[in-house]
Length: 181
Image (tube, rainbow, N blue to C red; front, top):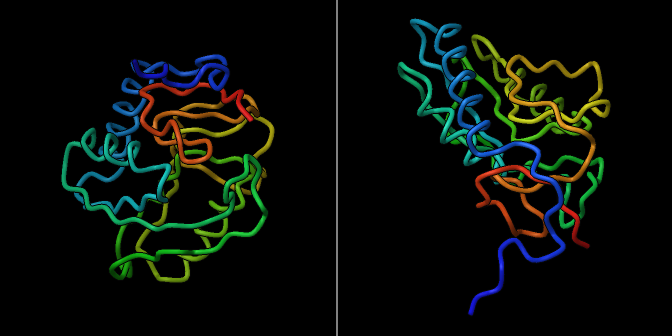
């Protein structure tokens, strides 16, 4: 017999259901398609957490779209950001002259988004917008502007739909609070 998943005691409240996620991602895709009509936006996902979101968002955009990914580290194995952003994998191709949408799974303090926004801005894109599935209420620096927001959540550590705790629970179809150690 297999153990229950998530493990007992690790999942608290389900904050966003799979159905709510699908509806909102479809709405974001339609908005991006309207805003980018006649263009081929490049979605830049931040690995690993945004991979599910970017995959679903890409499919919800009616029109041409390209993707690329970056990998950064700011959390390590902790549930709190270290305050230091390190690029582990940069983009595969130049973004000069491209319409870029930087896509995050979650914006907590905004440090990673701000760092990556500045990094990409220095590469001369035609336009640079930001998109995040989740934004934490009351914890994001007001200087961080997000063009497309899926949901605002309370300042709890969350898992599911790409977000993990100690490399587990990315595959949950919903977003819930993490109550484990």
